[in-house]
Length: 110
Picture 1 (spheres, helix red, strand yellow):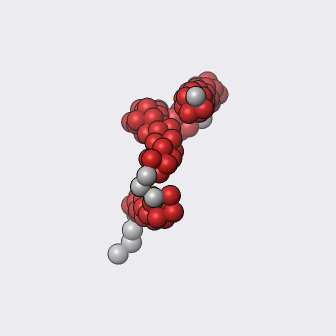
Picture 2 (picture 1 turned 90 degrees about the horizontal axis):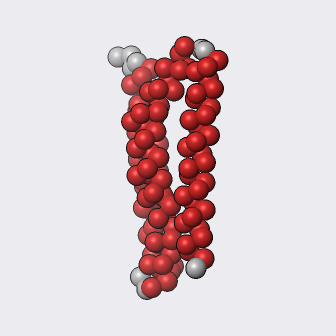
């Protein structure tokens, strides 16, 4: 039985996601053993997870649901205007991520 290229790509992404989740679980278990479940551990967890949550909620969903198919269509057209739109979208996403991260870091320093 021959596996299609799309199925193979999906399996690679699924395996990478599963491996990422597994290593994340191991990381959390090691940190819990080292830092403990005291206030220090809670503060570290909140400070570490907040930017990731914001990124996943705002940018992760937007990129996967709307922008990725749009950029794929632009790439297939091989049009200079489409390429500029794609680059502008990537720049806007990067700027938004930077602003959210900077604001989060500034709040943590208070």
